[in-house]
Length: 425
Image (cartoon, rainbow, N blue to C red):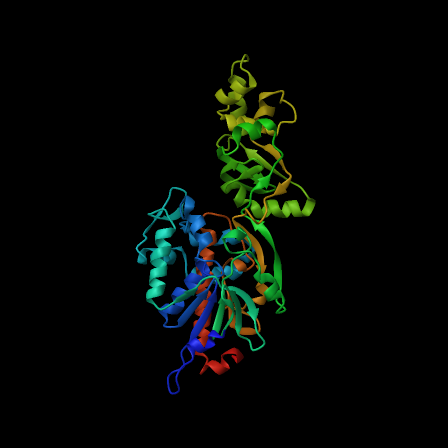
């Protein structure tokens, strides 16, 4: 079935502009919002039965939209990709995202950590309001359409429940996501399609992922699911404060995710990595040693850790996991508490990672988010080669690059006199 005919215009009428967006996640929906606002006809295609599945999953524990820290500090969270992402984020910064949510009837607030959430603390009300607005603007959402590439004439091809279809458009925005949590829709299957077009794709790797640690039986039997709060975590020279959660296979949580790139690189370089946990980051070694030395000599190690060092049972168990032998002095025990070594035996896979590293290489992407050599093809969101920690940085960049890709399309459309010469511009 050729759906290009759906958009044909009558002789004598102004040539309409129609844009296809493939991927109905945050980046794709934001691109659709900007294009619809400019009066462009938009159709969104997604292979899942409903849009924004991963966005809804992210909101199950409270939708962290963005972060309230100063923008210059905010941008440092994007590591090596900051130079390519910064213009898009500066053009659509956290304040603009908050205003967008407010315009949908979902005002936001800044938590004590600086993270920004909708007051409803949920993703579903915001998504419903967003989809209603897009529908009212004439945006068409086509579910259960799996993109399979292009045909010989350059039309987009899709597999559907009713067979293959082809679609033609003035411009295409790919917002296909990364490869984490594939059951929610982003499985990275687009990689082969783009590589088949001669485009370079950096291999996928898990980001914001958990780490595997070979726990003792006591740790597995007593503390799985237990949060470890008020700690500092280090890997090499990198150090963050926060909290984490014990799992049956290792550790997950914000502090671990913040170091995921450093941990992953260390593991890739040597086949292993070590992290250290500071169980009392609020005290230095001398102060902690003084407290331990002042404790009654009759106290057992467990009592000493609880009463003198102020460690909870899970903190004390972590200490034992990294203890090769019992420290002989208060100073030695204090140093261990301030730097418990834990050997990482592996990383959680893409199927459980919060986000993806790798993706379409930046060398293939122009400043306006078009693909080099393909002025009718634009890209945005997590399918690009960047990563960021949790805390609102992931969604902010997805929203911002989606809007930037839409702005790129609008700028290109303005330079074209008719549909026939668009791809040549």
